[in-house]
Each structure stands twice: as C-alpha cells, then as structure tokens.
Length: 200
Image (cartoon, rainbow, N blue to C red; front, top):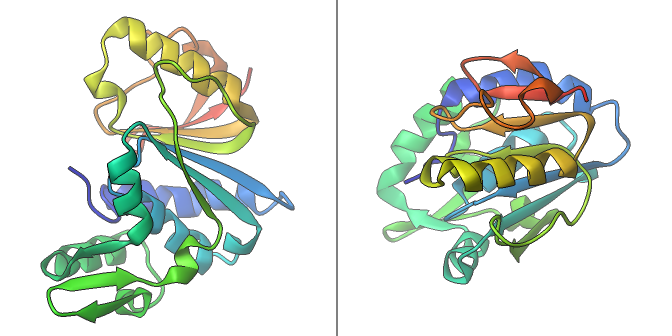
C-alpha cells in the first residue's frame, strides 16, 4: 500500500533538511528501492522540481516486480485518490497547485510526462543483486519490514556501500537503523522521518 506524499512530514523534512545539501552538488543521483506502483517516485520528482533541482537529478526507481514497474512507468492512478493525494501534498509543503501535475480523463489521472524525464525504471532484487552506482540519496521505505533480520542486515550493507559519504538514507516509519550492522555509520537527521546521514 502506498500513496503520493505518504507520511507528509517525511517530505516536509526532506525539503527543509536534505534539499539544501543536494543543492551543493552539480549532479545528483537518487535511488528509490522497492517503488511498487511509483507514487514515491512522482512525489519526489514533484518536490525536486519545485526546489529547482530536478533537472540535475537522475532518479533510479527499482523494484523486483516487472509488472509493477510497468505500472509505475505509466503514471496512471485512480481519480478518486486525488483528494487524499492533494491533502498529503499540501501537508508536505507543496508550493503549486497539485492538479497542475496531472491530466484527468474519465475515472483516471495521468501524471505529466515531464516528471519521468529524469527517471530510470529498472528491475533490481535487493536480496541478490549488487550495488550498481554511488548515490547521494537512497530511499528504501516500507520495504524491509517484510524481511527477516538476516535479509535486513544484507540490505543495510548494500545500501551503505551504495551511499556516498554524507549521503542521505530514508527508511519507513516502522523501520530503524538500530541493531543494523551499520548503525554507527550514520547520524540521525530527523527521528520521526527516519532520515539519516552516512558519516562513516
């Protein structure tokens, strides 16, 4: 289950505490792992557009499931979800009119294709595939809650080795770095948002 701008406080904190750090880079690589139907991808693309840095970002959006990747790439969602998504967007600090980002037709909306311009959708298995780049931001939210402790440790290692020093890691609201093999390698940016900065 996902939603655009799910946990609005996360996006508000990202905008306030992470974006200024990203603005110091000429080119920004972001990995969203386990994207499901793509709501998080488009939420982040909108935020980065509004902050004026989307054009120098490359977002790698991955999932193990090829069918949901195809759905995510289409960017088509039920119209009846838009009221919830709009409320989330406003709480997340959105600066435009949310309806500017989609076109409604019948009972569906399609998100503007420009939100996909800098997104690479690709299949990736967190359990068996290796690191494929160095990233300034990795968001792996609400994915590891489904993994046992051994697999969680494996994924934490993968994320740590994929993140640049001072890069930012975002986890889901019910996930934590506590007891992970790399707990000491991060400092907390914001506890409620589960945002961390790699320091070692």
